[in-house]
Length: 311
Image 1 (cartoon, rainbow, N blue to C red):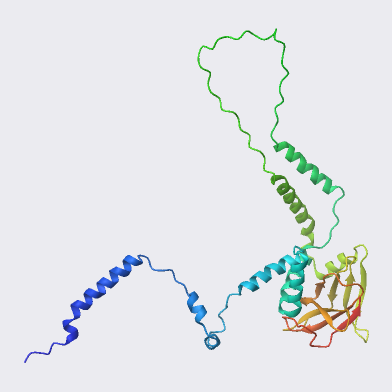
Image 2: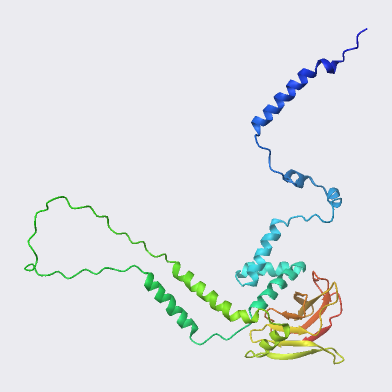
């Protein structure tokens, strides 16, 4: 008796032909494999909260578009490039979300390291302007003035041309771009600023304190506890800002947060991790306070301030 013939064995050539046809179809449709995308958009949109909780801790999700836009607005706010409406919007969000105050403090700390005032040499602005004007005149196209006509008696008699004169193309002078002058001025100003600020980039907090104390109109105040223990030094500048240098840094896992007390509720001035701190312009004569808070900051003080003193 012969061995039974199963259905799959009889249909094996048909399955192989169908597989080859499918393979050739997909190769014609997509000759090159698509690039590897670890997290397709459909997968990101289909993640449920329960699935997110199962994701490993080392997975970093990208920030939303609104947070990226606000971070750009925050950098423009530090440089003073926002109008009144956008600046008020940034200040409201800083008040409602203290975690952004650490980002603001990082921008301000970077600017405070670069913005130490240095005396500008006398007459530097005039010399810079004269140099830019001289370069602009040097690159300007020369205008040709017409020569005065001589008397007809001295002119030679015209001779008939022996052949056709060669055709000459007029010389076209391209005009100098209008934005080249301001770009040269901006580049020279940046070079002067880099030379003036270079000695202050690596200054210590104590050196920064000494520089602020020598400014015109600066008022130095010693910061002490109620029992007379020295906590640091504050320098109130003429433009309303205050530079504060504390004797020691914040405890491990914590940060200092500065406040100004105008009425009943304190207003946050930002979070700083080191011992030095440069505030924004204060509102007149205020009570300056410092408390120990989480690194992301708090909307209101959660601990007893280590100092509260009128500046």
